[in-house]
Image (cartoon, rainbow, N blue to C red; front, side):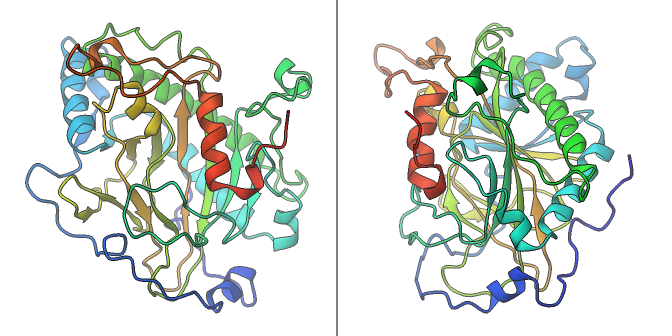
Length: 369
């Protein structure tokens, strides 16, 4: 599989829709904390680097060492950079390349695959508004990003597809005659990163003082979403975010590092910092489902995305990873005591995501019975 070596951006063609988008007027807003510049992290607030090569090689003590590092990362930062993971970089590069090719299509071809109530398909620039945000001062306005959403690739005869079960749909795919490598590349990439995410579960369990196999049943068939995102160039200005400050809904999110900056996270002391850039690594963070399940022991850290490179198209392919759709997430036993009772009622992926999608994606408001 060929490596994609263009730093994951391409120059926009004259007259493309995202170029016209740059000229659209944005309402003036002032978001003091949300728009504050990134700073150098203070001591103890740096994004940790967790190398799992020894763990994957099953070397003695490696699981416990990784668990200690994970505990520190999740309780203090909510983000870490994953190295030594073994996922084929050529496949990662190919997924970036296919994402760029998809978004390089004419707008009408992308709109033919417009995202549905299951949030599968294409969402245009300004097609989402971040409403569920923990950062004070964020003004609800459209995000400067377009995205193509994929889930597990279910066939038409799958029982959940036949039953029209929400969040268990068939994917929408571009014309294979025009993008012949898109579907096979993305299916292969999702399978590989799902395998990697599942391999991390014993580390999370160990970090929480659980048996390494504690999460196995809950993640027997994980729910996941691959978001193939494009942040077009735009003129800098107040209130303009690729994605406004937010926390993810997921158990964890895995983002392969690309050649352009744009991601920053909010530390516990209220400063924006950027993760270290390490070739062939993933930036990993926990989301609201992790926070709920661990009774707020593990953080769901606010973060934002802004295309800060003038004239460049930025691409990102975050993978949102969760437990099986109907698994009831009750407070993890090592995360509650008599003095620290559960803060949240038990919930399932389906229940929580119904609320989340209805809050943040107009096209995904519940339409099914």
